[in-house]
Length: 313
Image (cartoon, rainbow, N blue to C red):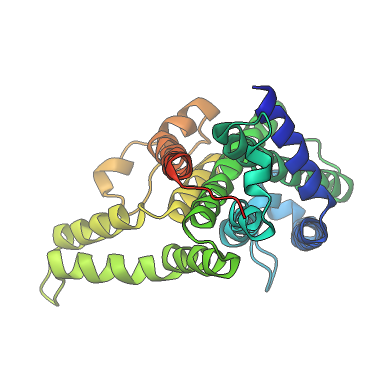
């Protein structure tokens, strides 16, 4: 445990002391603050037309003109944060020739990789909580509305989901940094996976769904529903899809279903916001799936690293 602590504090100091992390943090703060400022300004101009329930959460879900919502920003750029923090976590040690030197100290292999992962995850958590506090303070000063306990709880769940989501990409970057000795190769492989899960998964899901459940001009509504359900199921192998559904349901309490909804499902429902407990029940499968993806990816990284041959240079 002492070895993990030593590696953790050393890596945490390296993350916050590097220019790369500083530039990344500045970009996140500027972009997030800009989105919130314009959203709050727009909400202030149309304050009388906006429902008062959970109005503070709209700072995270509302888009502002050409700028996307904060949820979309985290969904799209969050993976890049995790990849940047993890793509050279191990192979940079090999490149500098310090891996065998570090392991010659009273530090075990598992302490090294565990400390690096926990330091990266802590860096992500500190970045996210900082920008959420900046957004909350900016929205508080512009709207003059104090978030209630329910809104703070939902922001807390959103924060945890965001850390887990970016943590998956961090563990993926660490995995490729173990598999590839060159940092350029690990970065390229990580970005390729990100591009596939962000862009191409929609096309792949559409093609597979159309092949298994084809739609023609005579197709019934039941067949169209099956096609959409199959497409949504395939898209849920993407961490981005899981995170977007979690964030959408947590920050928008009126969300009860995902995908195509039949008339029997909405019949008799009262359009009132759900309590946090029921919103968690709606997103529980997505939440568990996101956690499983992060843990499985890190477990593979751990196993490969523990079996990898390390030679002194």
